[in-house]
Image 1 (cartoon, helix red, strand yellow):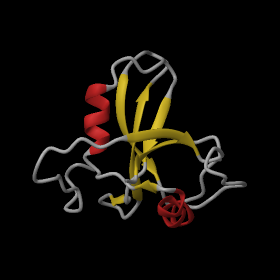
Image 2 (cartoon, rainbow, N blue to C red):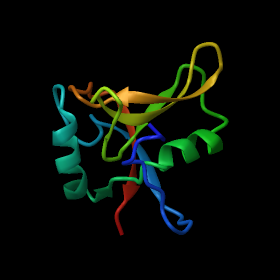
Image 3 (spheres, one colour):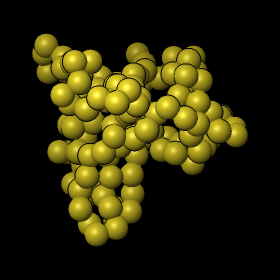
Amino acid sequence: MMRSPDFLTLREQKEIKVTKVTLGDLGFTGHPTTAQILEQVPKLGLALLPAETGPHARLQDKTQSRGDSYYIGMNPLTDIVGRLLVFEVARDNTDLLCLWGGWAGSMWHIDSTFVFGISK
């Protein structure tokens, strides 16, 4: 994902306040699509994060619980075969800290946890 031409970084370092929430916490029901989530986020007082948040979160979040994962609320990137992906920051069941591409081309479960920016 970081090799995608759409993966851009900010020109200057910037501190961004974030919140970690489930889609259910945001009022979603059923299985919302990525498009529905992206449309609702600004209406909820939240902001999408720059894609570089994923790698930064993985480097900083060293106390993540085993088996825990969360997605970065960002515009999806397209991989080499055309799949839409967002970063997933995880600590797997073997205790390995991971940064994966979470498939964003389908519907999400309302228990999915995301990190979004807090709008000012």
